[in-house]
Length: 522
Image (tube, rainbow, N blue to C red; front, side, top):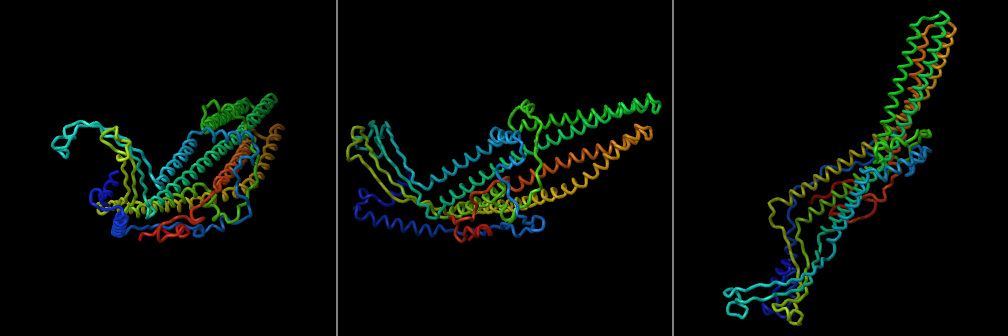
């Protein structure tokens, strides 16, 4: 109400200055003219603040050869189903529901939306009710000297309804709202990025568990083979073809294979513990996770226009782009700080020194008038604030550019690795077939007394290496496929991107241009 009182004094109520009600509109026009002149005077020099960064466009990053258009499909939100493992689907759903880190991300979304609603409230009038009752003794020698009130106690009562409305001539409140909404969209996209990260991490950990079980099969097969070799060595000892040295060596090899099996079992237990933690549960939850039954997938084809469409498909890119938009609107707010704030205030109520007169007609009071707040000297604070907002904008642009580069890098790495793994698998299958044949021949010759145990062991070592390599390649292929799904956004599609449709923007800047150039610094 201080601003209102000041405005009332400036306008000069008729009961104090002698002006009639007919003169009041003219005096209001004079006041508004003065405000207009003050507004022009408030258009202070913004200094040399400007942006140094430019948004990178997809076409500026050459990728057509590495990431060619192949007519493929983008991942869908239910990409987990393609692996045909109900347990994996259930684990991903459980993680999304119960993972604490993801719940933090979702809570941040709710908080950002509430903050946007707070900022939106600045666009509307503010209405408040003030009711007071004060018991006080007036001085006998102050303003009330010689009056019946001097030196006496009295009770002052007041009930007053006040309205205040920021006219927002320069769009500061609207820009602040757009900045808050952009922040909200960025946080929403970040929550989806966290969701995608969690779901793919669960899937990749689950795939690792599947690979460990496959390695366990290899280790168990190695034990069986070495036990068979031990029995064969015992038969040769009884036949006088070998000594106890070979038998002892064979038993030692069995023990070594059993050690490797135990190591794999340890890794399986650790993977289960990791999955339980991702689900937001205790380690006992991992004990109920059974062996995965993941279905192998064919190598996907890349979608058309990948480089361009990726911007709206990766949540981290969408979040980074909205951060740029929010920073741009913050610049608009900082520019508006140089201009006067003009608001309109009004009040209506009753006031009386005697409580019994509070509701009488003569106790009413009312007022209306503009209020002006003009920054004249702030010690460079406003210019420093504007420079800081431009710096934040540059940081947001640089972060977006880096995120775009990393997104293309990530996608290129996964598709390159996937094609290489496919080639390696084809070559490795031939190597495994030949190694199995060599081991079979060596064992047959050893059983017939035509070969040595050392030859069999060497052949067996080669077979085991190839089996482990086959398992590792299949596991890596599955992991890279899941990483590619993540690199392509995991089925996420942005509902809206900055520049997709006209929105309020700063002077000298259009929404379409904002995607290619920095905000104006004029």
